Length: 372
Image (cartoon, rainbow, N blue to C red; front, side, top):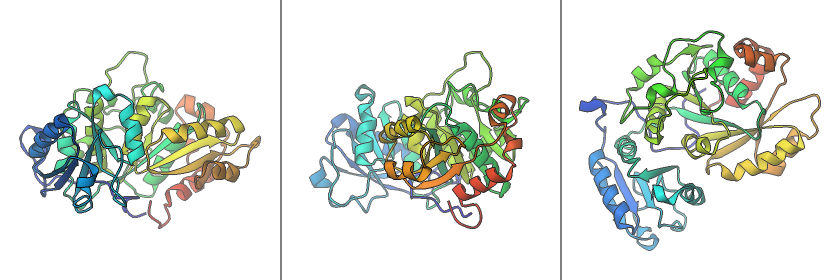
């Protein structure tokens, strides 16, 4: 497996030099192109780009953005922009205000934007993102797994994929994206493995050293993981800026990042937008297939493929489901005896060593010589 990315993203690089306050100096000056007629977004962007050390060019509308759009390193558009110039690539980041709510993510999906920055809350993250955009190294690949319905097996699939990748020598991180899921770590190990969990990053601001981040995480099955705690007590929840800092450190610290997105709207609106590819998992039954059709429009405009969980009682053909959704069928997750009990008892890694599971994971991740 090579480190080639599924599609180019303007984020993530190894730091070349540490600056004061825990931030990183940019390795090159990026040219930023801002398209918005909103005075507030213009002023915020100017301040942020200056902090990032980039060069800024602006256009107030689509007509004025035709020239210079495709030559910029990064294209930012404001939420007042509702269409793209003809035959121009999608913008890297959509800028908007918190008062615009979920409409920002719907607009981002319509425009094909890679990320959303809600200002002023996301100003620090955006500055860090832009400061790294001049690097030719796009960082690790982020693959998200989301279940079409509850109980589809997305967490199980994510764990087995991470285990298989690590077994092939790929530096791998598994991220638990569901704060209401009870803690992914409970399915991985019967004991609490030392290392940081999500609440430990609740006060994170700015950049995270990728080497320190990598070394701070618990490890099992050969891969690192970042889980929500598997306990009853209430925990602190990182805000959007902290999550963005974690994801940037993950890209810079690992070759492969697998994200168990969860089915909450918050997970889809945040972590899903960081993914280079999304794997939508459904069971081979009509209700689950219908649920997949409803989930699909909520996902960001990124490379998406289908996984189907196999079953001896399957009512619908996997290929038929894929064709009805208009997605490529990437693999069939095998039914493994004892998997539900293994999840409850922290024994999924033992079950992940079975041949049907390893064949499934190797095919999905193209682990025998092909790239992700």
